Image 1: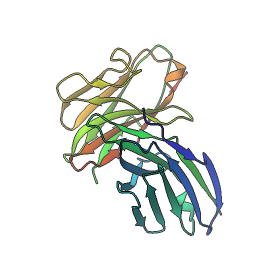
Image 2: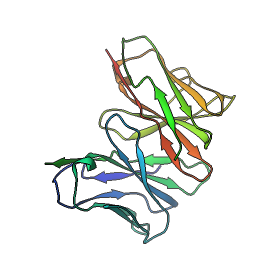
Image 3: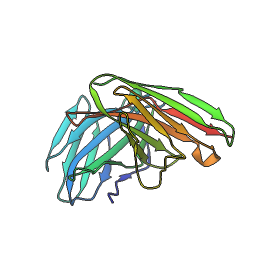
Image 4: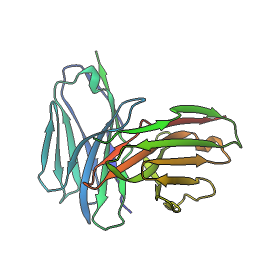
Length: 113
Length: 113
């Protein structure tokens, strides 16, 4: 059974500062790593899907890296803005046909004005 | 990206009653899933909704408690039966595409009193 861990659970960041948080997952049988942003009362929004060791993806001020050998991914936010306040979910999928996406508990990010 | 709508967005129900949640997806979606997020916990897969046949339930979830229908490709319902306070959660409908992407509805926030 996959176990996806995210840290920290909650984070307060001053507007304009940069920040990052971590997702760890079992490296065996790895297939794909997903990052989502989930704002209150909205749908979780897909940010990135990464599959290859060393992958780096970027979307505006947000970027992510992937290390499949050691089983971790970092999400970076540069120059935090109030609209970045959300819960960031990480999810991992295994390689077997019947493997489902397994989610972490999320990192709740609060941007302070 | 796929469009997924869900209703109701929230409800407050009494213990012992049932709540049915509806989910509508657009035609890009081929697979439909139902998730639950209990307070402080990960998004957890309840079941995969199969068109015209019984849903495929994950370990710990049973049809009597969470009956699911999917009469056609783009519509599904989840009923949470015989409600107890432990069922207070956010319930999310999700759709998967042939390209391996997964999209979410805005969720239904259920409070059981």
